[in-house]
Image 1 (cartoon, rainbow, N blue to C red):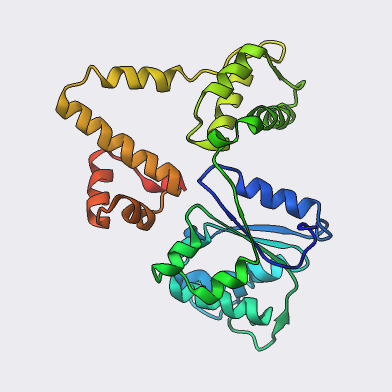
Image 2: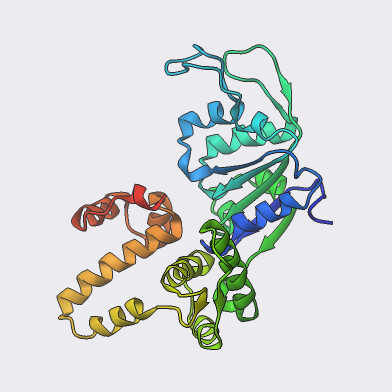
Length: 293
């Protein structure tokens, strides 16, 4: 019933819990499945380009407009527009999105014609949007437009009963990608998977399964190698105070980069550090945040 409902859906949950997979799954079983599913990473679109990306533009309408571009809204016409990391939109960009959602019309930059658009909106956020509304960082009117139904997805470590079915589904997907016979998990591998906390959620699980798949023989997976992480924890105890402090600083910033997909504003909000301080840490460890986007 949710798949074909006209109401907008908002998924909330930690990075890596599978919000994008659920959005695609909803689209694939809806009446819109034969039309486009257009995913948009809101954190990757600069505020100055949001309107042109959403509405499109005519060739020559501004510097750099070397061709006609129909925009993401018209590209998703008849289908689903998936707005990932919607919490990262600036307030001006939120206003432009709200106007589109209210009118369901777009007018490309440099063009007189107005186009009607019929699409389904599914949004996702790794932070509480209602908290962002309370902090005056997200428009309340936009929130109620996109959160017709809010589905909170718990982290993988809190869904122990789901871990093995998800792992087996991922293995089927990996096997198809590699064009090989479907791999399977032995009881010992399943035990290892269930006992590991998976702080990186489904994304981390898939990476570990892919590694195990490539190292397996005959599709049989006996274990999942998490030893690097466990060895890392043991080695930390042998470091001096200053070495441990430096290691913590690097691990902390890298974990935040993974969690926020390289979003400096969000890292600043979570850590309490200024953007300047964050960039100094990145420079010290020669880390490029774009590698995490």
